[in-house]
Image (cartoon, rainbow, N blue to C red; front, top):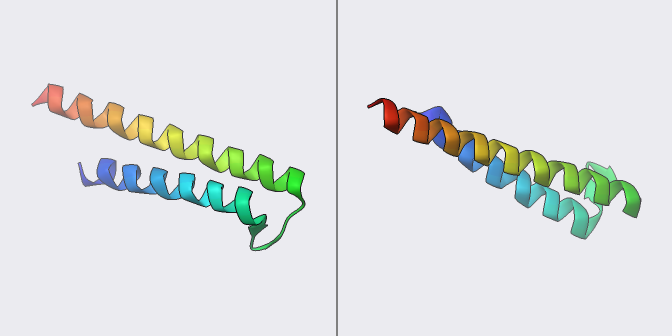
Length: 65
């Protein structure tokens, strides 16, 4: 159960990281705008995926109890 909540927090972290990459165009090194937008969008999508998967698992665990 703790893993699911940790997955929610991690998903939020990925979304914030994606926004930071898009705004500052920096991820370990400075990025060109096209690469920064693509990487930021990918990080945001992955964060959304993690959040949706965690919510699905939390609901599944509550239904089993």
